[in-house]
Image (cartoon, rainbow, N blue to C red; front, top):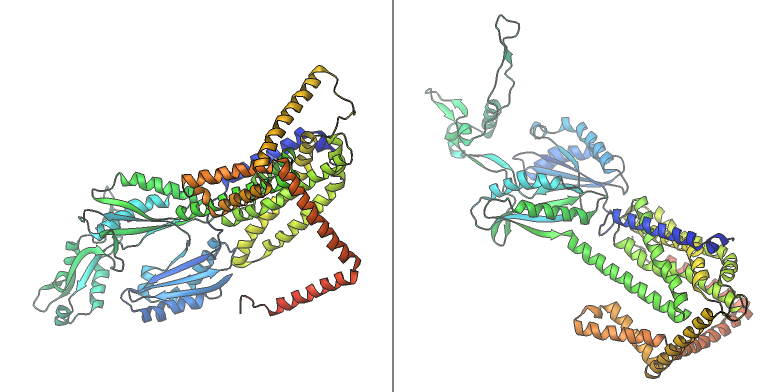
Length: 635
């Protein structure tokens, strides 16, 4: 594979990587941030109210006809229904993952329309509500009265007409509701008085329907000799309790008129008494805000908090706002742990690469490849519509160890060429990439082929694995691109040959001074490292390294300032110890010893071909046996 252009033009390779990083930064800024992907199946809710009916009546006369018509709607998985003694009924229809919730709501509404003729007249008058259900709660806040001067109905009404409309207009809010009741004209009938006048509740309902209506009286003066045409204005529905009290129920035999106030008590109060909210013992109302699918939860919550802060300044005296639940608390805590793990993994990879390569210049090349691949992944995630969540971040943590492999292969290949006697790092990089280019592409495609198929899985599990697998595949692909462009160019620039290209000594005074300065600098560094090496035995260095790694894993660095300082000092001593010649020599000797033993074992299996094939066959048989005997999730 010819990659001379990228090696001979390191600026081109650098620009490609910079462009990837810039696009990744743009993608990171536009990615929606959520705790998990949108895994909940699309849900449509159908609500109906049969005033005064029991739960069994609602079930038989409302829920059953609706379920018969809704059942089998396109892409439906299952549905659940509930009915209460307050006369309310609710049907939740769950659809397959990936179904358009808007189309699902339209399809359900069409089925509900078909069932309208089978429902009681009282239900159709009130109406049957069909809407998408939002399942991801962002914020739960309460409005409470710390002075105990307001009624519950006032607090609920204030939240419904002043706070909720503003919250619903915030970008990213799918729905917001009040866990309370609306204002309503409550008519408390007196059964004993009604029995005296031989009345039933239906008589009262009929009187209300006749005398509390919105009507169109019409107009007069059209096509007449009058100069003006007048539209008749009608008072409309009654609003005050006194107006309801004067509703005529019936005429009595003695000529008197029986009014509603004679057989009932009328008051303006809550529609129902199902909810009773308290905050620190004070009367309150609770409001829930739901997220719109595909939006940035973090930004939406920040906007809601800002809105509530501004609204709290204009609340009536004595009313206060309290945020009971904030999804950002869980989100930031989870993302903080993942980012912490990401940083720790980056540090560990750097340490491991440095121990094996034992050269800071060589270590920088794969280290630079890690952020380029990871940051560039965010741009692709933004294009395909993913979000920044725990699954994608965990995939990036695991991808660190994979994306660094391609760059390490390039560095090792160039070092191998330099060990063969190449006097030019550029020529060594060109020849190494001619040999390794095809191998890097093939191994990248194989690694991507491991993760890409999970994107074809369906259901909730598919949603989880799709974002995880695609993130891994994207990061691996970008690491290969980086290994084919930037890594060989950096090798040609950073790595130094063992001697000059022309094989001659430096002749100019400037070059001789440079050589002398380098030799003096190297001598000084060697003396310091030798002195440190005498104090830091390789065993001590290894112990400090293990302690530092365990400190990162178990969070000892953030316990208290004293412990943090101790672990930082141990980490610095470990890094200094790893840079000494004594540690490198001991590590190389140990590594060579292990490598010789490994070669010996491999040579044994190469010579015993039938034994090797037998072990492979036995492994396959055992694998099939355990696959057939291991319990599945359905069992």
